[in-house]
Length: 154
Image (tube, rainbow, N blue to C red; front, side, top):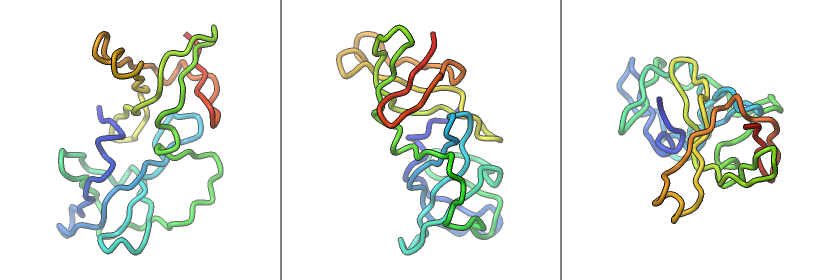
C-alpha cells in the first residue's frame, strides 16, 4: 500500500527511455474517494502541467514513480467534473454521523495496480498522534464529502 503524501514531489521516470518526465505535484481523486483518477505532473522544465493515468504506473519507489510510457499522453485539460485534488482534501475535518469530530485528514492510502483508495489517514493533532497514533478509516465509511468536512458512518 502507498500513501498519497509520499508520492507528491517524486520524479516520474519512463521505463522505456529512462528519462525523467517530470515530478508529481498533486493527485486527482474521484469525488467519492474510491480511486485515484490521475497524477498531476509538471514537466522537468516546470513549463507544462500534464496528467498521467494510473494504469501507466509500473512501480512506486522511495525516490521515483516508474511509468510504462515514453511520454505523458494525458492532456492537461480534464473535462471530468467529479474529481477532487488531494491538496484540497488535506486538512478537512472528519466528522462521525453522531456529530463527533474524529480528526483531520492527513493522507490517503491506495493500492496498485488500479490505484484504488483503501482508506484515509486521520490525525487528532500533535498530542493525539503522540499518545494514540494516527487512525485509518476505511473508504467504505464515507457518507458525504464537502468543502468543509468529510462525514463518515461508523
